[in-house]
Length: 102
Image 1 (cartoon, helix red, strand yellow):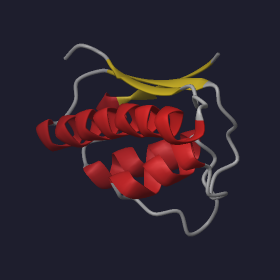
Image 2: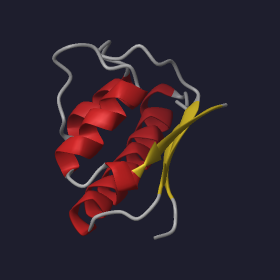
Image 3: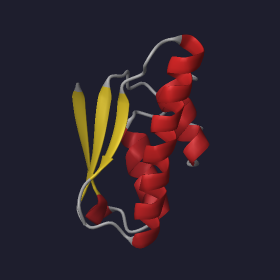
């Protein structure tokens, strides 16, 4: 499985974090910055990123409080979408967002 690291110390804002995340998943122009946009491209495969699963994105370093909240919500949403896809389509998309210790 491919491991991609994002150092949260380089992401003082949610915008900076989502920009780094879009770079990590090789998002195509026009990719949104919301949690649903990332879920769509990372789990449902709507064709707005070039990185192909399986992969794990590891977020390390000290997270700003808002960035941390966004990252945790995204991690939870990705896991819920994986479960939903397994239920609906009988297939798993092995994509994980892991958040390291503060």
